[in-house]
Length: 204
Image 1: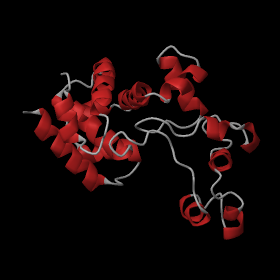
Image 2: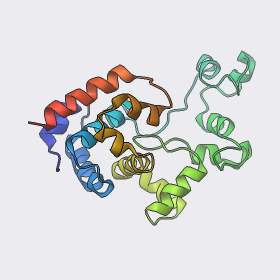
Image 3: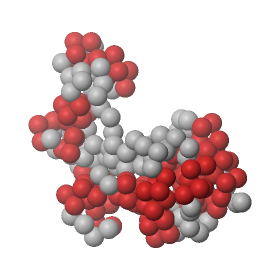
């Protein structure tokens, strides 16, 4: 099932590069068996929500102090601790992602190197390595690939496959899809609206 520019423009009206996006989607999706109405609609709905319609494909860690207190209270327990890091994305990433997901300590730089990238954000050394191995690239080659639109989509399709999301789409279960991606049901209403819209457009 090949997508068209017209379909993508209707499903993702805020995306300003539908030609490039449809080419990348058609290049990637079939290889991961995301090739039926439900599967494609589910992928576009979930990734559309996660990446603001495929426009935000890299983690933004440019937090002010209040944002750090709210988002990462474990690492920034008070305002003084947060102020020492505010508006310094590299330092923030290196702190909050240190010593987990295969990353080294805060001074290793791994937190920033392996920060979230992709339409469903891939984060941490071990996840990067697993993705790189699956596509026959080195980890540094995978980082460069993730900076492209095709790479951002393929990493999401890889996540989709390893978490069994195609079968969840086959069951038409948008709530379980969301839980597998989000760990909860954050943004479920928007995901449902996107899913229904995508199915409406794709079936015509």
